[in-house]
Amino acid sequence: MPARWRTPTVIIVAGCLIGLVSFGLRSSFGLFTDPLSAVRGFDRETFAFAIAVQNLMWGLGQPVAGAIADRYGSGRVLAGGGVLYVLGTVLMAESTSGATLALTGGVLLGLGLAGGSFMIVLAAFARLVPEERRSWAMGLATAAGSLGQFLFAPLGQAFIASYGAVTALVLLSCFVALVPLLATALTGRGDVAESEPEVSTREAIRGALSHPSYLLLTAGFFVCGFHIAFVTTHLPPYLGDLGFSGSLAAWSVALIGLFNVVGAYMAGVLGGRMSRRLLLSGIYFSRAIAFALFVALPTSAFSVLLFGAAIGLLWLSTVPLTSGLVALMFGTRHAGMLFGVVFLSHQVGAFIGVWLGGAVYEATGAYDAMWWVSIALGLAAAAVHLPIHERRAPRWAPAPA
Image: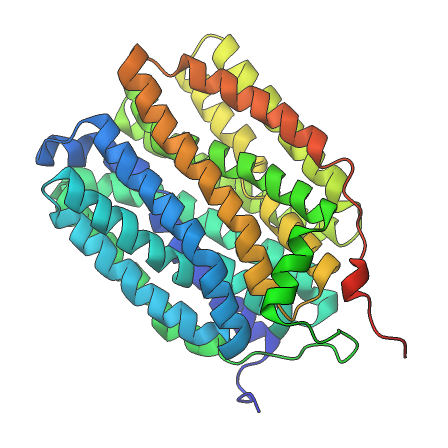
């Protein structure tokens, strides 16, 4: 029996705070590209490769972390992931070579994110929060992650300016140390509807991968990862190349987070009332338009901040809609693992977006090609969501009453 103090409100608040600190720190790493590289003697591609590895390991670890959470509960997974997250961040600050940076800021931190981030929180909400509040709670948790981005970007920049990049990373990691404590509110597996059929983990993954709508959803989420990782990692140095200050870069990232508080929350609310596939298609199409306007129009401080606000409305608003579709198609019994597979696609996209951004910059001295690739991918993602069927997959249809 779950403890009485673990009410739905307590669960939602604790999960939102985990999302705030875990995603807040993660989204500020782009600010360390030049400062940490200058201290340790890294070139931009070396730092980008470490962050790319981080994204890939996050994605590879997410289905495993989700499967463990499905079986043993989310609390233990979140606590263990939080510990790895702190260790990875501290050791990243002390890394003095490209190899150690890839191991600490890449492998270790990526595994910490797999277990200690808001993706596991969303899986917990799918089981621990009543169905009538589920879409709203998922949107709220995603919005909390965005609020963390808004808070941590200027805080990280202030720490860098005051204490240097190495000390700034250590100080920011202290916030993530709260994750294991907050995770106690999300312990337990929750209730799975009695009407949901018994399906083994192997059967679940095999059935999902043979379901066309699931594959289309997975392909679309690849683009989301590509966009987010490229922008968070390379927007600050891109703006620096154009002669803008680090402060403006920090505030542009912060505005993405602030406006996504609205975007993600509204996506959660609308996802309970409207077609999720059409909402997702509209989000990706709008991203393509925002990228095109940003690169086509003259760049100024105003246009940078306007871009941050516009892309922020579209930033993580894909997450509650995507996770909601997974729960709709397959139920909640294997929600953590099945959403983890979709998220793996997201992180493969993130790996390519971060690494390719660094490689293109080193090869051409500019990011122009990356912006146009992002536009093309946005249009492709808008198209692939249209054929998705928003209903329970046949194998997972509820048993007759």
